[in-house]
Length: 140
Image 1 (spheres, rainbow, N blue to C red):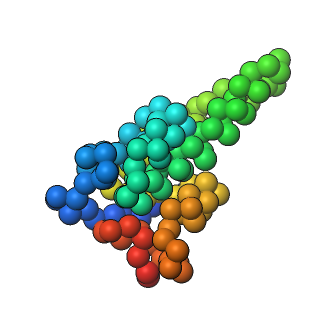
Image 2: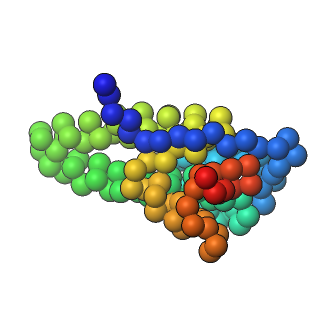
Image 3: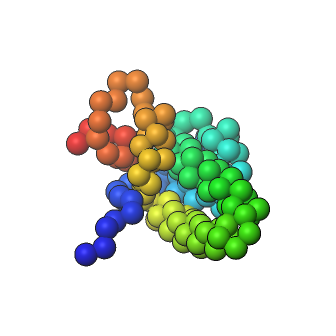
């Protein structure tokens, strides 16, 4: 049995729901991943209200910035570094596609460490634990 790399939960959005950018939440969340951590920074700066979008933007930064730094560092190590770099780049590409598709379909796919940090940062002060709901995080 294969271990699940990250957990996803489906988020229902109302037809008229939008973000402070004017985009539908799932579109804005998917755009947060398009250029990796760069688009994550842009969406995090632009989006002020929607926690679903802010979660994906912050997770994009927390996942792809360290992977980019690691891949660049390994590229300077002959042979072993190049092999490890290739593995990391392929894994990052697969994660990138999976996270874009998850966000575009309205899922909150939480990568283990980065997702927990992102969820902690975007939750409201009174939040005690739970899952994403229609308006953002909700109690279980």
